[in-house]
Length: 370
Ligand code: NAD
Image 1 (cartoon, protein in one colour):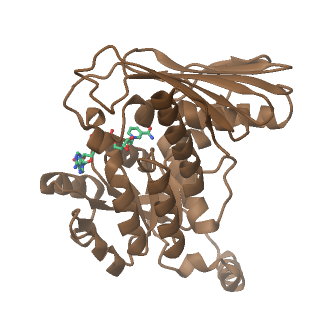
Image 2 (tube, rainbow, N blue to C red):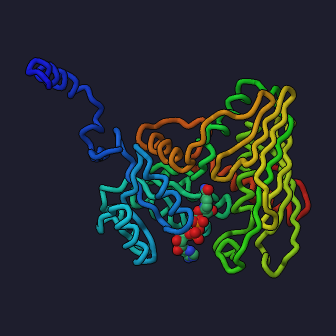
Image 3 (spheres, rainbow, N blue to C red):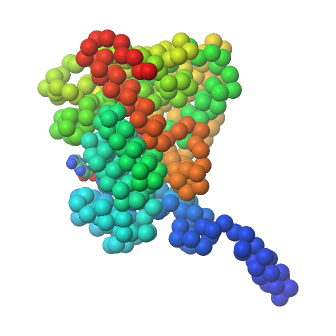
């Protein structure tokens, strides 16, 4: 049993430390029930589909981020999510009325997880409502859209982050750490192979109006993004070639398979494959003068596996979306700097490269990126 003396010591200590505690302890971010700990990012998910569902599940294990709202066009899904995640009616919106978020002080950020073509307008509207925005990849359909999104978020003084979950993945970060440490020596080559055989021909991913393209927008973007964080430089040129075996399934403007090459200022090159027509393609290979890293799977939900010239990876698997949301909460609430950026500029860099890859497919020529 606690003695009176211990009790008095405890309250005296509390009285001493209370004024020193950070302001969030008393602010609106604090959520008092377990498992939340410290400032909490209160998130509304927009788009309650396959990936939105995965993010919501993963957020249940977060201590710094909490799902508190939904934006959906399907009332039945809203009801289901309300009861599953105890979401109050006042935090539920549809695609017509979500601008009203500006009057809701109980939501800090909107996570946009809808088909690609909707990201641009939805992110800008969420920013104008004064909310930080996390947007799924690809951030927009092209660099022009990306620039407008970055500008709108700057003007609204909100943060824009892109759902690049691998930027927080421990084995990926180990390769980046080794590269920065010089363990691979001068980087010479990166290979990224990303693809799967896509099913249902009627899904939005095969509809140019909603997807903005084909495999490159959806899965090849991992090789575009990976080339940059594995090599550790920004590419200065791109060349690309498109192949199509099924023009009925993959209509005009929807790429089935693209091979692309990127050149970097140091002279390093990358050779990548993006496809909707082959399974078991999820492989990164980085080669330097002194060593190598290979990851397979390299971008799936994990566990990511592989080795470097020093041995197999030993880092523990973590649910990608859980650690992503924990880290994004720290970025938004505490200004934490991630090891690999996830901001709107980062999303925009990928969109510029994607534009160049599509342009090279059309012209057959090398496209300069600077
Ligand atoms: P999905 O089809 O499973 O879900 C899309 C959701 O958007 C659905 O709930 C749908 O009802 C809703 N929606 C709203 N307006 C729509 C419209 N006009 N047409 C069609 N659907 C509409 O797709 P998903 O797999 O959840 O992908 C959504 C986004 O998330 C995409 O941008 C995709 O690239 C991204 N994504 C990212 C990852 C990742 O690992 N980071 C994984 C999967 C998907």
